[in-house]
Amino acid sequence: MSILEILTYPDPFLKTKAARLSRVDDSIRTLIHNMIDTMYGARGIGLAATQVGADARVIVLDVPDARSEEEEPYRRGKNLVALINPEIIASSGSIVYEEGCLSLPGETADVERAANVSVKAIDKNNDPVEISAQGLFAIALQHEIDHLDGILFIDRISRLKREFIKRRLKKAKAAAL
Ligand code: NI
Image 1 (cartoon, helix red, strand yellow):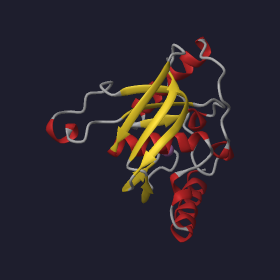
Image 2 (cartoon, rainbow, N blue to C red):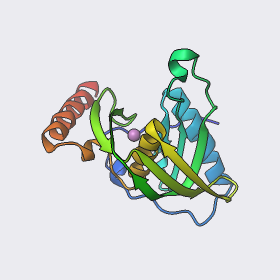
Image 3 (cartoon, protein in one colour):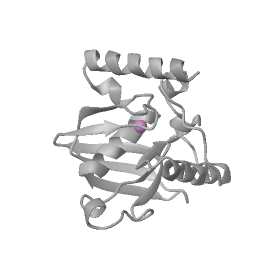
Image 4 (cartoon, rainbow, N blue to C red):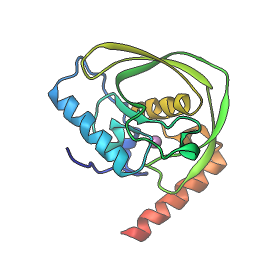
């Protein structure tokens, strides 16, 4: 297992539309394990393969329950899922949430998404899975599936805010070089 490098804006690979997988093999299972390590290492609640430079429709998520962070220390692994070829097959409602992204360090913005989604995918054993999600889990699923289509949360906010965040990220990256 190893920690992978997380690509950050404006890395052009983040705009890639990732390839569907015909089946999950050991190399994909290794990628999944490394993505999980990388997600936890970065204290994220979700990660898409596109963010670690892999051209594959794979996402991992471990979204805390609504109240668990306040009531008890968040238990890592409790809600862990790895989904291959995830597809939103139904959605309803709308919800606005202040999102962040490991590929856009330090930036957040209010994003409107569906409040409820059903997602179908296959798991790491090639078995079909279907998930119904609400709230933060639904938001995170949409955010990660977006990554597989080369879409960042800043692509879903007003142009003015997007350009402001892009400028700030480019400046931060230039300063770090
Ligand atoms: Ni993200």
